[in-house]
Length: 253
Length: 257
Ligand code: HEM
Image (cartoon, rainbow over all chains, first blue to last red; front, side, top):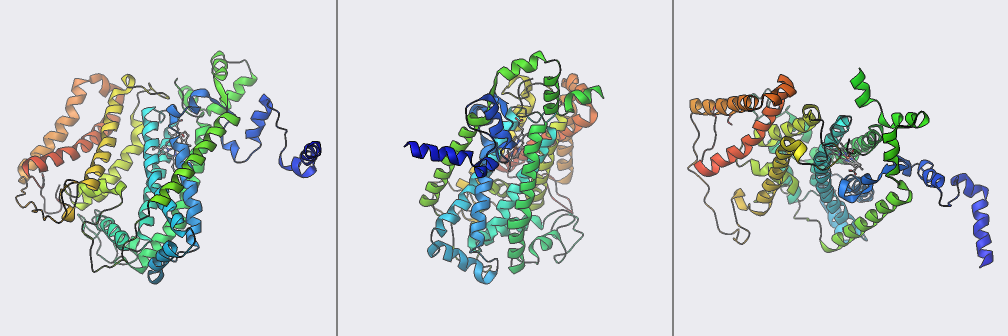
């Protein structure tokens, strides 16, 4: 017992330990602050917050949950990338493979799918709560704008991800979307005042062709795994930084 | 300039600076009500993350993500539904042409959302739940939010083959008659109707509440009222279709509304 204790002490006094953790853990005001300030992950928080901001009934925890779900999507998404090839010949086969052969593959895919659905719900609730508490009012206007951009990107992530399984559901749901896009005024070939034809309109740009085919699958894939997540990650960074710079979670004036 | 500083100067810096100098009484009172993030908030965050992880795993064990037959451009799904969060837009396709339902409406919604903080100049009711201080903003935003939900519910639960209305207890094998007695207003009536709706809609609120107009100024007033009129145009059009079988309120050689 006492040997164990002294071993623990020796570890904590060691150079290695102290090079990582710069303060001890006695419960003092200073240490509580250091705990946040000296940890790169925790320091997105302020060390102290107004107590109403920590209440579930104020934020509904929806921003934080949305962030958590985004991280879940990144992790499960990267794992799925090990098994999925964005090529017509393989895409659907890989989904079957994930479902029936890859150990835990089905759970992996299910989590990725359901977390995505949940994220849409929580981001909408987050927006609702920010509106209800008037938290977009000065000086937080711009963070609301950043938020709306995150909302759009989240929807686009869902839209692009939906095609990837390359099954009937995916194909025809994206067909509905693509049919709307070709009706865009001016730049869609079936929209009012079309300036373009089927071969150079905005739908062609998105699909890489006039039909949903190999090019569309590849484009949706690149958007889904690189372009949109990276943009979202950067914007989430800006969003969090701005919360701090705008004076923390809003409070009654 | 003075106002700019008050409102926008980075508040967290101000906080630190004031701490160093003479302490502001209000700040001090606030600080007493503060809580520590470590461990109180971090523990809550951690527990939430654990709970969500469990929920996701259980959910994933119980329900499989759908996987139908391989994509086949030759055989269309009927109905082919978008994922639930887009079903609201798909539902609008019943009442509007694709360029409105799929392009204009989503774009206008996004633009309006972005403009909200810049057109809502009511300084009151920030940082807390209140209804009485911001009735106008809350009523309109919540109606919009509710419309999004209701359209999704209808599209998701009540639409069957050919996007016809089916109650949940009705079988999809029963073939429903496609409405064929739709008609459109003639251009003169249509234009007059639209002009009246938007014209009066723009003018009357300003006359009723001069105060509101004066506070907003012409630019903000126009943006706010136009957004709101556009929003309510959607349920109005739906009502016209359901009650009077009106397909378009305005037919032109280039587009129909
Ligand atoms: C990926 C999406 C998003 C993430 C991860 C996210 C995350 C967060 C978090 C963690 C907070 C802290 C307070 C809270 O939890 O409520 C917050 C605050 C805020 N969010 Fe978001 N958010 C997202 C999208 C949005 C959207 C769509 C909007 C609005 C359209 C928005 C507007 C705001 C504003 C204005 C604040 C400050 C609120 C205050 O001071 O009370 N965010 N966000």
